[in-house]
Image (cartoon, rainbow, N blue to C red; front, side, top):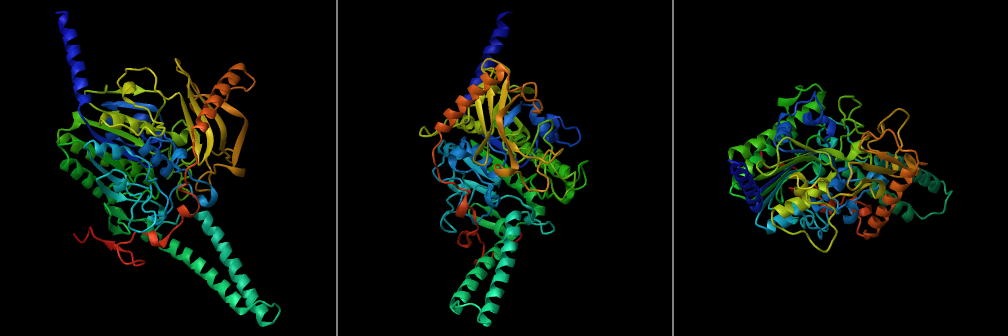
Length: 574
């Protein structure tokens, strides 16, 4: 009888090895701006997320899961490539608020020489699809070169938004795009008008000796400049709020009321079409980014106004997609992953206390460099029969880890000519190792290193050093009055000497260690050496979100008609 338990153990191990030897289907579910404090299985008891909670019960919950950046475009580029945004040129900057891609008609985006996990899996025979938000650029030189488009980064199928949801997509909301620049532009208009008027009067009275041709030429140039920006901002819903199927625009501007249902429908259809596998389906939700648009069916259902309604609608969408996996009998052969691109947005919308995010016990939020609330996100991985159910891992892991993990599961190999910062998660998820392979993590705000995390070897201690952090008003925990916190300059605090926290017993980062202790010096020296090594590995690359790469270029503007007459709804016509 003693042989029977041993036989069962061997059979169990054989089943796991057999499952992992096959190419599993891969389902990636990425929320937008979801805070770790907004999910039931991560401690929230007032917002209903039964489908996300189900994933956690049936899989592994990652409670120390870290985004590579606190904003959309940089974080998503790291997710797709397994590399810090600083390596790919996908870091933003404070000047003009160019922290993410601002236009579908901009030339910046995920560089063409980067290799995504979708591209590798496609080479291994996977059907690859992305449904939902992209926000990593569209074209480079012409309207139809689509150099940054998902179909040129390894995906077979794209149904979604090349940009991101913004208030401008809902006509009843106040515009949120480039607020600071708009104010500056209005001041420029007034100065320009007064200058032209002064020149005209002075010339008429013969007080100045400037040729009329020069005055007219200057006036014309200035008028064209302001007309350009007027058109750019006045028709934002037509420029940015569009939906595409592959390379074709199907809605311009998009119909928000039908989006949730259509994303679910397209996800189910993709699963059904590719049920014989293997497939990669990346569902990149528009929820819960501002303007928090929620369909009528879910409005008023939660205890947290539109914010909670939006989360509960997204949870329903996840449930519908998981139901499709169940119905097709794919659950045991599907690696399912859920997370958020970064922490919740604390500055909120419309000044309402109910329309802002929650990052639980963690300090800070979206856009706040190395503060824990901006980068610690919910993480769940499910694969029945291969990964243990109802398990919690509290070791540092990263969104970048999905890159080497799914690449290896799909029997592909990452490129050998560059540094991949992500680590294979499977040994940690299966309990084969006690610690993750991340000894150090580097936390950037734009291109400025704000903090560094150190997982001390052979220990449960995780240290965190802060070099820079946002400057809050007294008693505030966010940059209220601004859309986002700054990463440098007068609106940040430069910590000299740096602050050191023991995250293992102070996850809220409230009590820094005294800088005159011996332990402080030892930890700081170790981290400083790691920073020097990390910086030595960086190379100068084109900055995708800087300067002219991140302005509206009419000749690059995706348009379903003859520019500038860009409007259509091909879905309602079907």
